[in-house]
Image (cartoon, rainbow, N blue to C red; front, side):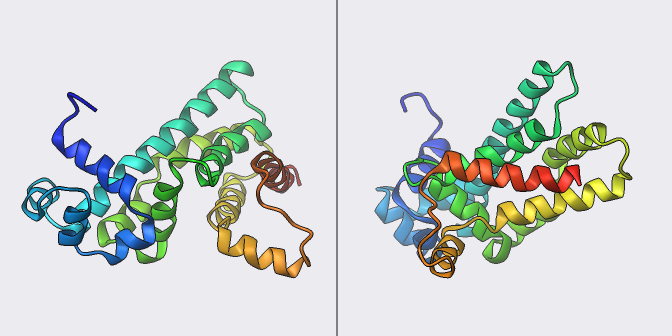
Length: 206
């Protein structure tokens, strides 16, 4: 958009032009050609292909976590500062699930974030391993919602919920569709969200 710094415009162009798979496979020079800029320009702004990928990753994870934080804050406001478990888990699960919808313009970005767990750059993996500030607020809210549970138990249950969320990919949907002989459908995002939150909530109410 006019007035936007060149670096941000380049990031927008790369995200718009490539799926996560193609982006991972292309050289920086080919990426530059595809978005109508020079290899030298991408090097100037990002230093390397890994640098470019990390900036896309960092921008989108920050955006995703802002959405989660906003929803958690709104839930706290609605419930006098003490949101119930279901509202906490909805704030955690709903934003990435919305991003994963086929019509979402954030779907490619979510694919990149998911792939970063196993195929990301060193900087991405380091961020995923050590930057837990966005999860801290959810852990604190869940501990407050279940003061009868030892904090370690809350952390474990949150970990299992995150595992469910990270495994919620279309390859797994395809396998589930085969396993269920066609009974399962993944196209209804609202129904999928309700199922995931039901399952996660049950784990915290047990």
